[in-house]
Length: 389
Image 1: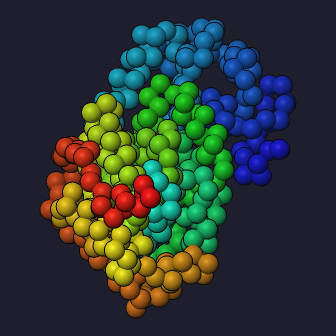
Image 2 (image 1 turned 180 degrees about the vertical axis):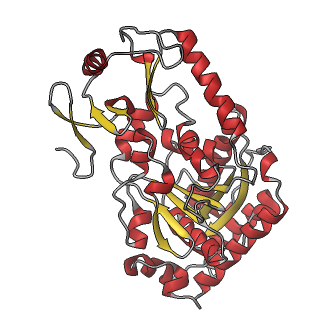
């Protein structure tokens, strides 16, 4: 059954109704828009309209899918690979000369392979805390469960799917939810976005390319068009979408619940970040390891924090203490600062926000250092004994 949130189109050529999955299926002709259900119908549409090379102006017959590109600039046609390469070179040159003279927004991914570590809670409250400090923040949900939108009581008509697959400007898809805070929501259509990413040549860099407009100067008539920080809430997996999130980010915040299995998950996160640095050639660093669900009465919790501090040093942030208010806040569609502003949880997350703001005041974001990852992350003896009991 088709999802009610799927984008539907009616083919201009054969009139068949279909789900829009690929960007070539939406053809832009100035102010007019056409839909094609297949590459066969795409060729028929181009043949009926007449096809001229965007670069050299030569009239030709469209035969291969690579002879047409549909992106934020519309649909462009190329009579040869040479013309396509010339177009790509020209686009790169234009982007470099039109880039914003100011610094781009900080990009923070909240990531851990293991579920249940408080990633969404951390992403929502860190974003809200930064907005509370006067920074303009965009919170991006990269999890198909859509828990960011649920936690804040919003559901976007245009989601991350529309940004990734259809090239919608993220600034147009984002929803203002609080003062200085906007959210780019997600839902189950991200499964289709994963298929789209898999078909792309630079499949781990699609999110970075789609979010590039957030680095651009403010648009005419939009004074508050730029973000100071972009926070990305990742899903608990090493999916292609999460690879995109890590390649987009310049720093990673790692929530780790105070238990043995979560420490094992941190080791996996470190290995992943090393691969992003070395294999994908993108410099991303650890912003901080954040112990969550901390209960000082439990020995395993104390030893877990000691282990993280021994490994990360000052990059191990003060722990988030166990607090019932944190679990109740999403049911009220509020952040912890709205639901229980004087609670221990609000105090703890304000400390995290302060650490992030202080980190940004000393970091040269244009030259974010690569992380030298040490995978030999020890675990507490008590946790080890419990695991083998």
